[in-house]
Image (cartoon, rainbow, N blue to C red):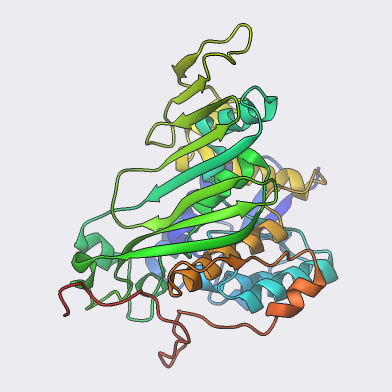
Length: 393
């Protein structure tokens, strides 16, 4: 039996994958790359035989079958390109790319090399969202016309500061539309639809502006709207700084389904009273079970999604089907965040999203490298917040 050698790049997030990977007999956690010596030591205690690497190029030299990119949010694309150029499969966290130009480079590298790539979006694989995918797929709700999602990640100022080590850390400059995978990803996965247009409005927070000693993104949240290729409307946030926990809703011509406000929560299904399918209730709330591997999923993070993303990726490595979140859908989600931000800076202007499967669309944006993330000299080409506080400070 072939053993697949996996390398982890970035252990702040990557550490959580070690116990999941160790649960598969045909997987070897072969190497780590991490600059924090404490995290590196902890990882080596869990996998004593792994190689400790000091930079990404050294990691790629460890005869790997795949690399898990758990490094900084805005640096995944350049690392994915390097890996695919060497024939190494890519499991990419959070987002695919920080600019439209890097979306193009990522897609074209995957096409040219035949590289295997998956964006590791985990929220769609909670028990509740998998159940809603089943419900929408069976057709009793009718054609899905509307879907909404919210992702809210709130914490005290002290925790925000701890998550932002250094003035050029990506979290200090992240616009509210960019971290969009936890809301848009589930909407795409449940419906199977792709966004084709986006508009957005961001809302400024006086409270967050008081944190300007270590963060510069002063918006509390941004609300985005997308028209899809299936004629539906998606309404969703990026990563919101204020509000209740995450929630999702899908509305069809015959009825709707929605979650409670936690990843492992219940599902409510409601039909129009004159369109209740035979054998169904007009309204029902229940806690769905896992379709498979429930015990393993329950032990993993992000409502079980961390297990399922790894499971799906390993099936892909073994010759199974291409995952839903392939390089094209990954680039599309990144583009929605990027262009949603530009829409918010133009009072909610509607902007077309490139179809990255088409070279003509890629040609339109292949040189578009505008970014809110600073380079090593602190230079940015886009603002990361919409404006100053309403009190004029």
